[in-house]
Each structure stands twice: as structure tokens, then as C-alpha cells.
Amino acid sequence: MNLQSNDKSHEALTVGSLKVLGNIDSGIINSIHTHLQSSDAAQSKIIADIEKLHENISADGVITANEKQILKKEVSIIETEYPIILQKAEKAKKSESEINAYKAAFKALRDYLFVELKIFDEMSEALEVDREAFNKKFADYYKSRAVLQVASDAENNLSFPPDTDLLGLINFDETPQALPTPDPSFTAWQSKIIEYDCTNRAEIKMTFEEAVNNVIILSGELKNDFTLQLFFNKQNGNGAKQYLIVYKLTGNFNVKIETEEADTNKISQNINAETFGLGCYAVVDFRGNVWAFEGNIKQSLIDEILQNTENTLNNTALQAITNFQNEVNSFFIAEKNKMLLFIQEKTNELENAHKDRLIKESGPIGEIRYFTGKKYTYGYLYANGYSFIPELYPEFYQFWLENFGNKNKKNYLGYDAFGYPKLPDLRGAALRAVDDGSGRGGASLALEYQGDAIRNIRGRVGVQGNDGYPNVTTGVFQTLDTGYIDSGTSQSSSYLRLLGFNASKVVPTAEDNRVKSYGVYPFIKVI
Image 1 (cartoon, rainbow, N blue to C red):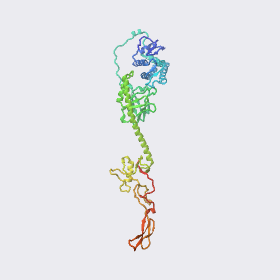
Image 2 (image 1 turned 135 degrees about the vertical axis):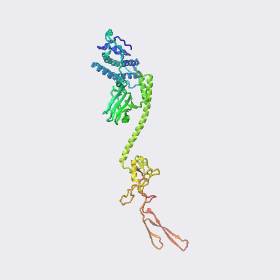
Image 3 (image 1 turned 90 degrees about the horizontal axis):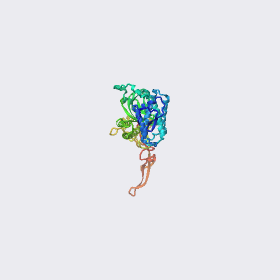
């Protein structure tokens, strides 16, 4: 673009394919060309970006994926400068009509791009647009912008006298001037730092203007948990960037960093004496998630991207972005796996805690229960006489010592060869309440073992005659007739009777002494 120094305020200014300054009625229109010739680097950059943008839009009105990237950068610049221009215009006491016109043009442009075209929803696909409507939206915006900013700058110090001959009357002091010494409290690098005082605060919401800072310092004394809500606009992705967050906080509470988007990732940090002066890199992605990064490799890639994306996305920048994406993908995979393990561990802890609570509330330690399955049951150990590890069940071990650890008592359970205490062996045995002074018999201590025994069985045998053979029997006794037996000679013979004993004639019998029962597995409660 070649901007002449002579007055062309009556003509339209062509930027690329757009006529952005035409038919402006203003008493200070003569200063427009002067403003555009100014050494304002930001203004020159914006004009260069506009030219680059509209040169890349094809003649048939199709915006390619690469052009979308350039356009998105241009729109980001527009949104960044919007509050600044408004502030300057209000400070310069510009007319309300001019300010409202600028606001309306800005809103119309945003609505056109984000609501009507939804131009950035699919960044990888080309989009057809109405070229005239597209150009008009940008032309209207830059026209209203130029009225505010050009007039404002012109009123301050940039307007030329209409008669150039008057320049000869101006005395220019060409004496070299020494630059003032920089104030360390207001240097360029500090202009990118914002510090929030979190004392007596529960939450701070970052504004659009504050989001241009790259370093966030959280300072003060926490009196409660604190949340920093980073700026993020889901509609256009503004706020998707990286921050260095430094903690200069005292207290012992949690700090949470998030965006306003629901169901997105958040990062948190417990604040204590060891965290003072430390920090992390936080990255906001295009979905509003906040991720915590280590500050070495990741930051070097971010710096590389920033260095190569000052004006356009060149090949070096694209490669840097690809490398960064690969790092992010690897980071996500590693973090996802760690997070899944963490979630599983916490889930197990919660389940176990829930089980612990239920088991503890279900009965006292040492309670005997029967199950129809032998499989391990949480909170119980199979009462088979095996040993257990006291460190795993400290409360049960204390119970064991108090009730079964005295070797002078009949219910002493003892230790195995390695010194581990043994469980009671309740297999094949029935439980019976202790006698405890009732006089009904039974053990005197809990889990005191008693061997099997039966009640006494009685019977009577009656003998009649001189031969001594039993003739009358009762109870478990009976006589068995076998008939006459021969003594071996022809002169003598006798009649033989045998005495038999059979307990089944009186009580049910089996190979072991038992009660009527069903088979179950005995367990003892250990938590």
C-alpha cells in the first residue's frame, strides 16, 4: 500500500480488495492520511494483516483452511483492540454517536462471523461466503474504527496544518535528547504480569482485558479455599492460551484454577509453607479445559510457536505446532493413564471405606458367622486354624490378645512356627453357648474346645437256672440262640446262648457323634 502525503480525504482508501474509508463527513478529515502515515507499529501491523487476509480470500468467495487461520488471528487482534479503542475514545470525549457506531459495527462483525457463518467451527474445511457481504462487514468495522481512532490521534498530536507552508514557521529542536531511566516497577516485562490479591477472597474471575497477561501471581493470605476462573470464550476460543502461575500465598487451603465451562478439567494445588514462590504452567485448550504442564519441554515449544507466529503461520510455525501437538497428545495419554489409575485407586479406597463402614456397623470384631461359600469375604477370615498377620488387622489382633492370647487358659489359640497368631479352627465342630454358671454343662470360656462324648447307655441281663445262660435281657442287651452244640461224644450235648450289645436299639448311631445339622463354612469377623 502506498499512502501519499497529500490530502486524499475525499477519496476512498483501498485495503486489499476493500474500500474501508469512504465518504467520511468530519471536520478533521484532513488528518486521516497523517494518521495512516504515523509510526504507530500496531496500526501498521493491523493494516498489513488486513491486506494479507483479503489477498488470501479467493475470487470466488471461498475461505480455505489456511485463510481461516489468518482470519482467526485478525479477529483476535480486533477483539483485543476493541476495549482499548473504546477506552481511548471515551477518554478523548468522542461523541456518543461515533462510539455507538463503533460498538454496533463490532457486534455486527462478530455476529456475522460466529453466529451466521460459524466460520471457525470447522477449521480444517473450506467455507463459501458472499464476498460482498463479507467485505462490507469488515469495511463497516474499519470505517467506524478509523473515525474514532484517527480523530482521537489527530486531535492529540498527529494532524497537519492545511497550509503546508506553515511548516517553515515551526522551530524543530534537533538537540539529542537522553531517554529517561526506566522505572524498574514499570518495565516492559512487567506489563505482561498480573497479580491478584487473594486475601479474604473465595473467587476471582479474570476479565477479557486481564487475559492478555502471560504471568499470573496469586498473593495474599488465604482464609479459605480459593478459585481462580480464567477467561475463556467458547464461541471463538479466546482465552485458549498458556499462563505461568506463581503462588505467593500463605495459609493452608486449596487453590482451584478453572474456566467457567462446565464439565471441564481443572487443576488444583494445596497451599502450604512449601508452595510459597512455586508455580506451574497452565494451558487452556479450545474446549475450556485447564491442564497443568511441566515448565521445561512444553514451555520451549510454546516459545517457539510464539516466535514464529508474529504475522503469519509459516512452515516453521506449523512444524512447531505439530511438535507441540505431539507433546500434548503424549502428555494426555500419560496423564490419562495416570488419572485412570488414580481414579481406580480412589474408587477402591471409597469402596473399601464404604465396606469398612458397613462391616464395622454390622457387628463386633470376633463375631462368628457362617457362609455357604468358602470364597474370601471382605472383613472376615476363614476360621480354619491358620495364622494371620497382626499388622493387617490391628483391632482384631488386640481382641485376640485379650480373649485368646493367655496360654494359661483353656481357650488359648497359640502361635505358628513363625510367631504369627492362629485363628480358631471351627471346621467340623458345632458352637455351643458357654455354661457361664447355668449348671447345664458346656465350656466355661468362649472358643474353649470340648471333645465329643455321649450320655451313658444302660441295660440289664437276667440269668436263670444253673447253667448261667441269660434268659431275660433289656436295653442294649439281647440273647442270641445258636442251638445245640455237640461236645464231640455221643453221651453229651448242650444248648448255647450268646449275649449281644447294640446301641442302635436305643439311640440313632453313626460313625461320629453329631447333632442334626447342615454344612456351612465358619468365618470370624476381623474389622
